[in-house]
Image (tube, rainbow, N blue to C red; front, side, top):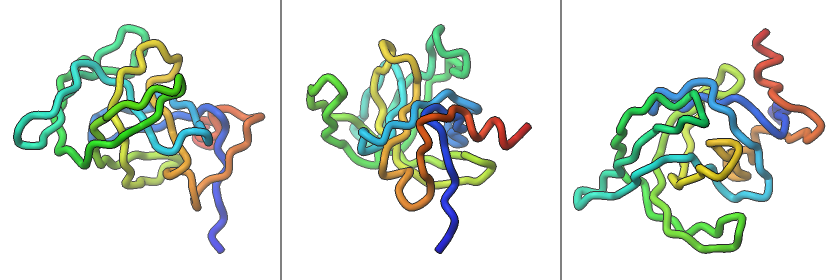
Amino acid sequence: MDKKKIVGRKELISILDLELYDLDAKVDTGADSNALHCDDIYVDDDDVVHFKLHDEVHPSYHGKEMSMPLYRMKRVKSSNGVIQERPSIKVKVKLFEEEYNTVISLTNRADMKYPMLIGRKFLSGKFLVDVSQEYVTKQNNE
C-alpha cells in the first residue's frame, strides 16, 4: 500500500496549465470536487471555456484571459445549497512537488476567502487531511 501524504486544512497548490503558482487553497472534505474562482466565464459554440483570472483580493492571479477545452458541464450544489451548472476543465496541478491530473469546476468565488477549493475526489487515495495543520506543503519545502 502506498503511503498517503498528510495535508492541512489550507495548502498551496499550483495549477500549471493556468500559470497559477502557490495558490492558497482550502482543503474541503465536504466538497465533492475542486473549484476555482474565475470571472467572466462562458462556453463558446466550439466547447471552449473562456474565463478571466483577475482578482485584487488574490494576488496570485495574473489578470490573464484564459481559454481551455471544456471537459464537461457539471451540476454542483454550492455551500449555500444552490445547484449551479458549472463548466469544468482538466488541468495539471502540483502539490508536494508532484504533478497530478485533475478536474476543476470554474465558478465565481469572490465572496470566499480562498480562490481554490480542493475536494474529496482529488484527495481520495492520495492524501489524508489533518485539520489541525495548515500549509504542510510549504513546511516540507523549507
